[in-house]
Length: 186
Image (cartoon, rainbow, N blue to C red):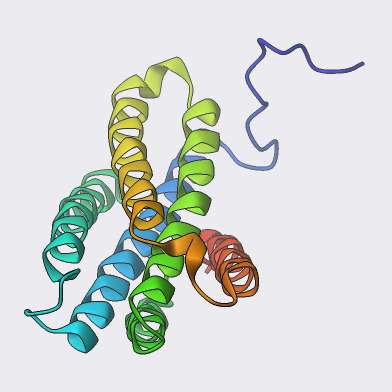
């Protein structure tokens, strides 16, 4: 029987609530850590004098707040962070620096692609959380809106005009979705 439009998606049947929250916190912590590293990589290439530096610093400062909050939530809830943090450390920085080396518009493709995936990811998590996790859902929604702001900033700053936009965006989105699945489990 098809699901009703107003029904919430079922929680993953194989996970109890604590396991679901642990997985959510683990992947979101990893994602925010990766986002901070992406912006650090972009800033390392662009430096302080580049016209995009202040914009990137603004987005990074919001990601820093998100990361700190997930650090707190992991400690408070006794969740296990991903074992792949050293990988995220290198990969996030490399993605940010690599796209910045391709130019301002390519860096904005990176931001737009990552934030598009994260918007969808947070929206799905918010739907999955039960009413007893309303406070967490509200925090995720606040973060989601800031990720949408970052995506929109990237679009306004030429992401769609980058040479090879579709290919680069598709690769980054695929990579993000892949690392989300890995971080949930490892």
